[in-house]
Length: 148
Image (cartoon, rainbow, N blue to C red):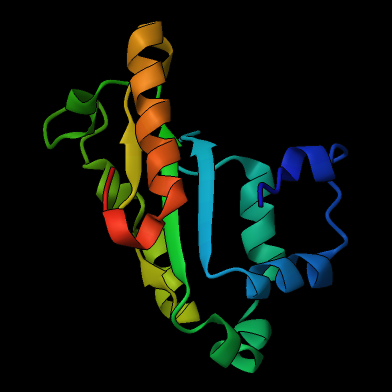
């Protein structure tokens, strides 16, 4: 199932956290696909984390969340070299994702390594089609294929 937060909440007003929690509990693998904005996720996704994954919910529903899988699929505007020590952004992108890993630990969900597509806008059509095919193949059986 694809759940588009921006399509569901075009006014950015998320008042359906119980609906979102129900969706979360119904699925074994949760994939968050987003562009990297200012070293984090877009604001509506951050709002989702804050409203849906509250400490009370996580404590009450820990059995329903435990053992699920989380994967982030991220596009960046900068090349991979920018996310290196001494690079423009000074840190590895995986380090910038640590807050998301902490959310996963809090929820007792299993962290799958993120898929990162660097400088997505500058890839050729052929490269993007290859990425899309690999992604589609992974989605067909995500726990069998590991990474992309």
